[in-house]
Image 1 (cartoon, helix red, strand yellow):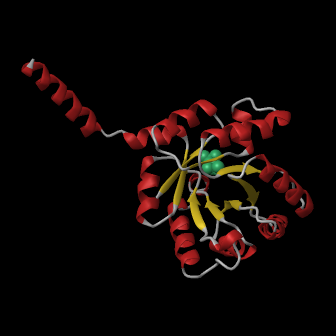
Image 2 (cartoon, rainbow, N blue to C red):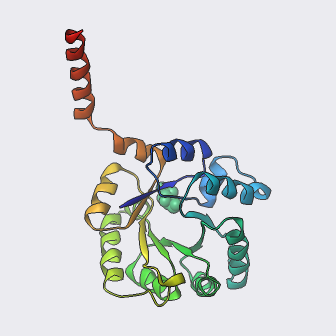
Image 3 (tube, rainbow, N blue to C red):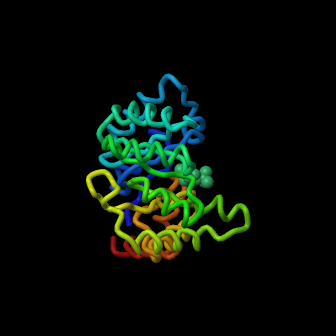
Length: 224
Ligand code: G3P
């Protein structure tokens, strides 16, 4: 399983990259707003992320029509070769994904909440599909079960004829809220988990590691 960092915060990205922990980054309009991002600095900000991370960096289109999403996507793809255009799962998004794939632009189809949506995204030519866990749990449903169903359904078929460069679709488990979400997604075979920095830090920690370290340090003092 690969890990992407779900943030627009450059300090978090630099820190996680220094651990060798992340293979990519995902952003969304909320995450950009959270760091005080400004509209006219958005492209420059995505470029900075692309300079730090040697892997796919998802930048989301906020357009609502096919043509606008395509125009947005083509501009975003100009920022750096590792930009992936994030497109919402909706009719206009599917049509734009088909067009962007024709232009060789990889798409991360986001806000995906069902198997039929994921299958349509795959047919449209999405390179990545992002089912959301936490937001599904928020409405008293089972986000992890949904990811498992999507992984199973997508892996039943070969979509390589539809993707840019014939690459395999990868499922990005998104809206990850805990280290346990990561464990469960890895066991069900999700390709990638995109995690907030707080979750990444929790993934490193274990109370038995802390206790073991403390006792080793105490015993080492006896040796001196
Ligand atoms: O990047 C999309 C997704 O990971 C957002 O997560 O926690 O806002 O539902 P969340």
